[in-house]
Image 1 (cartoon, rainbow, N blue to C red):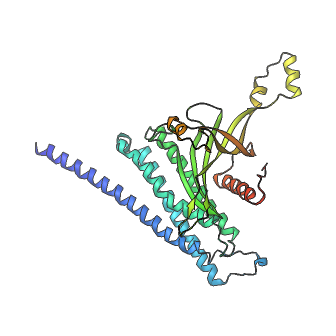
Image 2: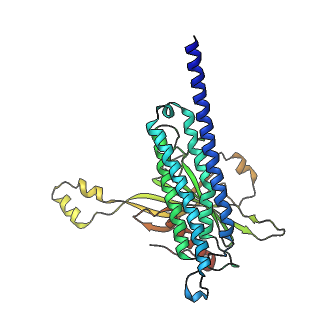
Image 3: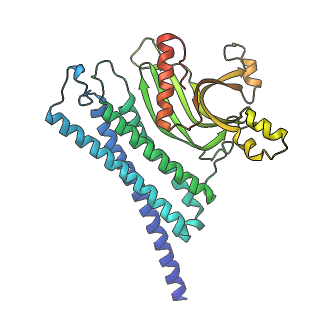
Length: 344
């Protein structure tokens, strides 16, 4: 009897220690992110985000260079810490039987993704934010920060897919508790606030029906409205997507000749299917977004819309940073010229 009570007490102590350790790790991650978010304020003021182009008329001093290298080093340490936590969670999942049997272990993923959001916003806003009162940012620094963002994004995507393979989380967008996508930062470009999201795997563009179109990224674009008062007011968001679609290409003359001779064209048929990547906008068709009749909105359980392609990116999937660059370039082109430029 005494041994049984001792075993139960020992088990309870182990569970308590594991819970406290998990909470301590989560607090440590949050504190580290908050510390580096504080660094963002000094990055964001543009004091040391100089342009190394001699035509800009400004040459950074040795002290400026040292301070900037120190800030980049601290941000890189934060990146390595988050990557190491991802590796730790993966190791626990793969090698710990207790974790596999503990369904609460799946809560780590949404918590960890949420914890990484401030760091993503630090990277994206520092690399992309435009401020007319600050000197241009160094292209080398911008590239480094976006590489950090891409590296963490890829690692989190792998981690989510691994947890999903163990049935700890769902990737189905129709599931309210799914982890089909996660935030990878926010930035302010001129009068536009852009929120960036990454889908863990190609996801049907419409959850209610199959259209052959699959989304990989989403951008929520809000445009600032000029008005009275100190606070910023934004218009309703526009939704842009990075999508892919399998397109059947026309057969060439050689394949037609082989077919007429009775030869097998199975391999040739497979080669005709090409995956095309594009960026487009969600355009609502019903209810009419410009209508003032509220009855249509009340009676509509699910708004209907279609995908309007804006940019064709070709056969190769772009990285999340490259895709964001393409969209921002198109949006800024639209602001300047009123039209979208097609990127091949």
